[in-house]
Amino acid sequence: MSERDQGVKNPSRRALLRGGLAGGGAALMAGLTAGKSIAAGDPAITDIQDWNRYLGDGVDAAPYGMPSEFEADVVRRNVAWLTADTTSSINFTPLHALDGIITPNGVCFERHHGGVAEVDPMQHRLMIHGLVEQPLVFTMQDLMRFPRQNHAYFLECAANSGMEWRGAQLNGCQFTHGMVHNVVYTGVPLRALLEEAGVKTDGKWLLAEGADAAAMTRSIPMEKVLDDCLVAFKMNGEALRPEQGYPVRLVVPGWEGNMWVKWLRRLEVGDKPWHQREETSKYTDLLANGKARRFTWVMDVKSVITSPSPQAPITHGKGRTVVTGLAWSGNGTIKDVDVTLDGGRNWHKARIDGPSLSKSLHRFYYEFDWDGSELFLQSRAIDELGNVQPTKDALRAARGENSIYHNNGIQTWYVRADGVTENVEIS
Ligand SMILES: Nc1nc2c(c(=O)[nH]1)N[C@H]1C(S)=C(S)[C@@H](COP(=O)(O)O)O[C@H]1N2
Ligand SMILES: [Mo]
Image (cartoon, rainbow, N blue to C red; front, side, top):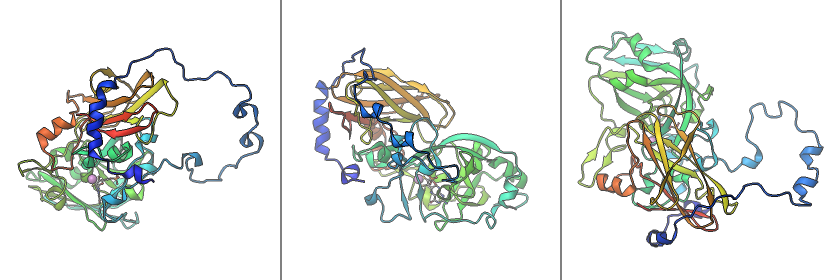
């Protein structure tokens, strides 16, 4: 990937763009169509193509199917300068190239602190101990004998959009918003396993630990554990990918990704939180006054336009144009998404299409006729509790600028008259 894609933007440019906004209002034009009239002699129509002339591969050419070679660009990408090495690192979901609400398994972003554990499922055990009547150990086979459930949930890393706190930085929604994926999990309710072990009355917290070299550990309050947490072994119908915690991971719907312990090996019931590294020095939000918000678990209402965006510019010229994006909330479903073409002066209701599921990504569309003038695109989501996605200024006023976590501020894309699109900030 090019330097430009990962480049830090010059902040003075943002001021320039902000100043230029006055002239950037998009006048809507009706009546332009997306199809073209048939051009005489277009070889794409008149010539017989190879794929039309010759037989193709037979079945089994690819026992495990892969995307078309023409889609080879649709891959996870990392940003090399963000982390010192790739074992404790992050890569990003190619949101700009996807549609619908489900993230294909092969492009779900990965975040791990000690590399991908290669766990043999036959040797894997999940232990429950601590304040329980009966400590228990489960094999994978044992887990699969509990009644299963299927749920689509988003997983968002608390650090998603963290590089954008102070201003526009990374040029692409893959990089600004790609620490999120949305998968249908098959698993058993954590509640069922704990009922089997019998939680003692003073058992108010649960410690979840991973079997990887990082031994990721997080404290989770018992209310959440008993509400909707899953011990999952399938994603989108097939076994979890090694990167996503094969053979078993914790699913903590609507809450920050760090708590979704992968390669789950140990559950300890206790009477208070453990104050592990990942809930003290990390994944806490340092405020302007030097105090830190702690245990900020819920991922707040958020949205982003995925196309057009810097990696998905407008290449078709003026006329019929589709704006699309994603919205989500750790509080439940998304009630509304508004889209603006002029940096927040005029807002239009977007169309949510596809399943509207609690704590799952929602897909929205806004179709309009582009007159070819520059655009300042933003989306703003409102969740079922009425929470409205804040501007970045509002967020900074409340939280200061020290934090990298829990940035759910409104994103702006600047679309130039030639369709090229850039990350800017209007707050
Ligand atoms: N065992 C273990 N679990 C883990 C991690 C890890 O490093 N080790 N990383 C956490 C973090 S910070 C995030 S954001 C999510 C990422 O899940 P994913 O790799 O499926 O996207 O897993 C969480 N669970
Ligand atoms: Mo994370």
